[in-house]
Length: 126
Image (cartoon, rainbow, N blue to C red; front, side, top):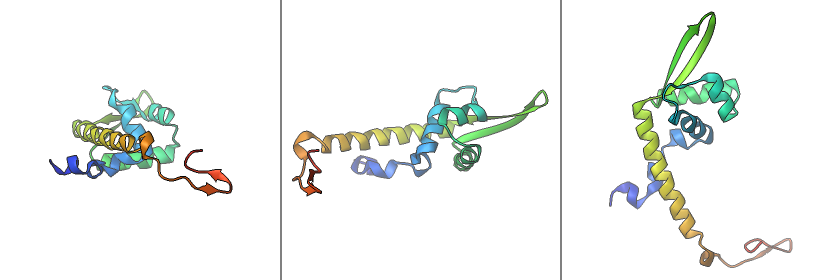
C-alpha cells in the first residue's frame, strides 16, 4: 500500500481543501472555454475581493490560468483550469472520496458511543 492508501488525509491538497477554492475549481471543471470573473463570482457567491484572493492562491499553485483582455472597450477577466490543475484536483477529489467513505463507514449505526446528558438532553441519541 502506498502512503495515500494508508492515510488518504495526506492526499487532501490544502490548496483545494478550502471551501471557496473547492467551489471555484468545481465550477471551472466543466468550463472548457473558461468562465468570466463575474460568472465565477456569481456561481460561488463570493465578493470581488474574496474571489480575487482565492484566484491568486490557485494561480500561484498553477491550478488556474487567468486571461485579461478587452472586449470592445470593456475589460474581461476569464479564468481557465490548467491541465496540471485538473489532474491535481482530480487526485484531490479521489482522496476526498476515500476520506468520506472511511468516515461514513466509521459512523455506522453500531458505532455510537455511550450517551450522556447535557442540560437534560441526550447528546448522542438526540
